[in-house]
Structures are given as C-alpha cells and as structure tokens.
Amino acid sequence: MTATKTYEVLARAVRQEEPGPCFALLGDANMNWATALAGLSGRFVYVRHEHNAVVAAMAWARKTNRTGLATVTCGPGLTQILTALPAAVRAGIPLVIFAGEAPLKSGWYNQAIDQAPFIVATGAAYRPLHWPKRMPEEIRNAFLQAALERRPVVLGVPFDLQELPWEGSEDLPAPSSRLMPRTGPVLPFGADLERAAALVDGAEKIIVMAGLGAAQSGAADACRTLAERVGGLVATTLPARGLFAGDPFSLGVAGGFSSDMARACFAEADLVVAVGCSLASHNSEAGKLFPASKVLQIDLKPAALSQGRVAAGAWLQGDAGMSVELLTGLVRTRSRTWRSAELAERIRTTPFDGHAFPPEPGLHDPRDVVAALEAALPREWEMVNSSGHCSYYVAHMPSRPWERFLTIREFGAIGNGIGFAMGVAEAAGGRPVVLFDGDGSALMHIQEIETMARHGMRIAICVLNDGAYGSEIHKLRAEGLSDAGAVFGRRDFAAIARGFGLEGARVDDLSRLPALIDGFAKAKGPAIWDFPISDRVVSPVIRRAHPH
Image 1 (tube, rainbow, N blue to C red):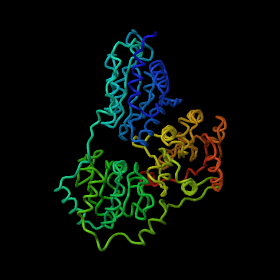
Image 2 (image 1 turned 30 degrees about the horizontal axis):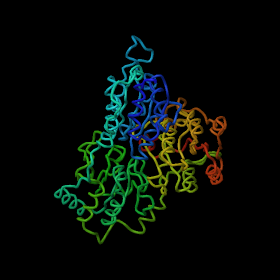
Image 3 (image 1 turned 90 degrees about the vertical axis):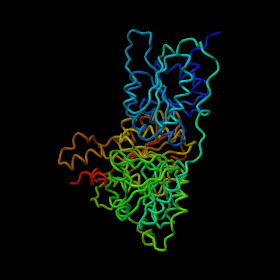
Image 4 (image 1 turned 45 degrees about the vertical axis):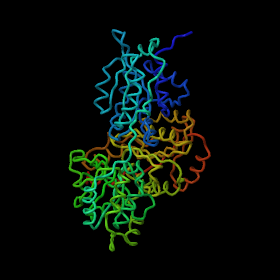
C-alpha cells in the first residue's frame, strides 16, 4: 500500500472547509496538492496567468460573500499576484491562497525568494507552514483568519515537505465554520441614537448614502424608509451602485463617478447619513462633493479618519439595518420635504454627463454605447465593470441592481476585468455575464478567453475601443504633452476572438445589439463585441482633475 503523502492530507484539510471553486495555475510547488484536491471532487478553474487566479477568486468571493480560494506556485508564480493582493485587501475580500514554497532541503533553488515580505507589503497575511503535523490546523486557521479579518491569507508550504509521508493524526481539526463566532446584530447605544435623531431632525435636505456594508447586511429597505420619512434622497458608494435601482429619488453613485444631477443635489444637502460606508476619499471626492454638509456615519466600526481626512462629524455604532430602523422610529415626519414630482422628473431625465462633444464619423460616443447596452441587455444577466476611463460611463446604468453588477476598483488597477468576469461566471449559476472593459485593459489578459472557452463560461466581453490607454491620453493632452506613449491603435478584437475559435463582432451600428445579444443567449461560450469609440470624449472625472 502506498503511504499517504502530506499533500494529500492538506488537500483533505482544504476540502473540509467546503470552499468554492479553486482558481489555479499549476507549478512544482502546488501541482501535487492541487491534483489531490481536484480528486476530492473539488471544482477547479485552470487559468492562463496567476494574476487572474486571484482576481477571479476575489470576484467569486464578493458575489457569494464567502472566502475565495486560489493557488499558484512559489517564486515567480507568487510574484505575479502582487497587483491583485492590495486590491483584495482594500476591498475587504477574504481569500486563501495556497502558494507553496521553495524546498527546504535544497542548498540552492532557482525560484526561491523570501516570500513573506512581498505578501506582507501588500497588506495580506502570510503563514509559513514548516511543521507537517501542524499543517492541517494551520490551513483551518488560515480560513478562519481570512473570514474574520476579511483579507487574503497566503500559505507558504515548501514542496519537499508536501512530499513527505504523512506521520500525523488521520483526524483533521474541526473546520473553521465551527469556530466562527456566532453573534447577533450590534445595537446602537440609546444616547447615541437620540443624538443622531436630533441631528437628523435639525437638517432640511438629507441624503441617505449606502455603502457596501449596507448592501451586504440587507439594509437597503431600511435606508429607503429613512429617506422617505425625512423627505430626503438616496445614493450609494461605487461598490454598492445599483442598490436603489428604480427608486425615483435615487441619485446613483456618490463620489468621483457622480452624475451631474447627483453633484447638484449633494451641493445642496445639509446632512449626509452614511450607512455602512468607509467614507473613502473617492466617495466624497476628497470632501468636494458635499463640502457644506454634516456627515453622520452609521457603521459597526466608525472611523475618526478615512484615508487621511476627517470624514464624519457624528457617529452611530451598530448594525446597519437595525440602527437605521431604530433611528427612523425616533425622527420626526416632515410636512415639507425635499422630494417633489418635479425633482423626480429631473433625476430621471437629466443626462448623467451633459457635456457636449463634437461627433466623429465612424466612432461612437461611449455614452451612446452605454445607453444602447442598458436598453438591450436582459435584466437578469450579470454585469461586470472593469477599471479605466470607460468605467465611469458604464457605472451609469440606472436599471441594473447591485445584486447583478460587480464593481471592484479599490486599487485603481486596469487589467482586472477579464479575471473578475470569470469569477462572476463561476458564481452566477449559468447566467450570462457581460464584461465592460477598455481595449488597453482587455489586452493585458486577453489570453484568458481561452480559459473561458475551455470551461464553457458564458461571458460577453464589450470592449470600448479607443485605441489607447484612455485616462492617460486625456491627462497628457490636458497637460499639453504628447500622447504618443499611450496611443497604440485600434486592435481588431473581433479577429482576436475568431483566432481563439470564438464569436466576435465589430459593432459599428448600435442597432445590431439586439441580434448580437440574442445570438449570444443561445450560444454556450464567450464572445467579444468591439465598440469603436471616440478618444475625444473625456469623462467628468478627468475634466475636473485635469481641466484644459
């Protein structure tokens, strides 16, 4: 009988944590363990670049509110994920990443590096597993740490130790789910509630702004009710965009991505009630979005400072939904409110960006592309917004609810969209996924369309193609500098798709969209739709930061 290897026991330890799919790229330090885990009925998605293993796990974790799982090999496999980790840390996404380590028995190994400093520098945790008998317990503890601290935990396991015959107990430690604290909602302190109610009662124009904490805790209805009670408006942070889709008094996104109408209303507000928001700099546009307003933060962890600035002047500590419900019960009902039929009509009809740009023959205004996609895409499909210049426009799709729209851009890196779309596809249960990406971002990991096809992922990639890195060309032009270093020409994405054996189309006529969508709905794999857009349409984000 063949002796049980340590990596087989480690695979069992991971399997009992009941993770979702493992996003993987195999190498010497992880391939035996990964093969053993796959043999235990573990679902694997084998990607073409390590970065996308972690990025896909991030998106899967955000969509399911569970801990994501990825694996890469040691050395260069690990260094390839260093852009993804800070994004996961800043977005508060729990991950466990099995990375392996160089063998301890070798005096020299080509791919050996000191891995811990790289990982710790990103804000993630690193757990070196160097004592075989403790490894199963350490794996359990990694899942526990990731869930409690809501950040990635990287496991470094030397692959020569993985190969050793197992000499420990055959009984695994209890899984992390049994050790997770079972706690109820945190109720706000009575005196704090009274102070918050007095603050609300003293304000005239109130905006209830919900963040990811409010969305994930199911506080949307409570926020809506509070806004109705005080005759105020509602808005969301960018990660929670779409939470109030369909509400006639929803201003959409609060922050750098705010619409013209949202900016006008925030300028009038005298109180912003921030529910489950971290109050990041982008959320308030570094204080410029609502400079005259007081801010009441309702959160489990109220912050004195956020990203170097004083972000709130009053706080209410407690569970988002229950705190808002209790506050609503204390505040007075208004006879005169900010709400009116006329205001609702202005919110509905005012373009999110009313700036006029001259049309260019043969090229779309990206705002027209987004409007056409908003009108044509089925409501039940999943949407994924990447980063980059075009992501501003895509954020303004008013009918798309938060549950069907993923935005993760806390680190501001492009090149993540394709990985995010794969993670969402794995979480979507077969529903089609639509990725909105720029050409520069998409080309960074275009090889993953082969992964999508191999795994039968139903992902339509909408490339807003301006032939350049959009943010950079607009900033360079605003500074009066040459944009040559950021302009690369319009690659033919339809031809790229066909080169991989996939469906591809260049969309010169937006009236073609319904037919393309219908064809994709009947297909079983990915497709790419290439939208040639003007490189002269500049988003308000760039116009404000870099005026000509």
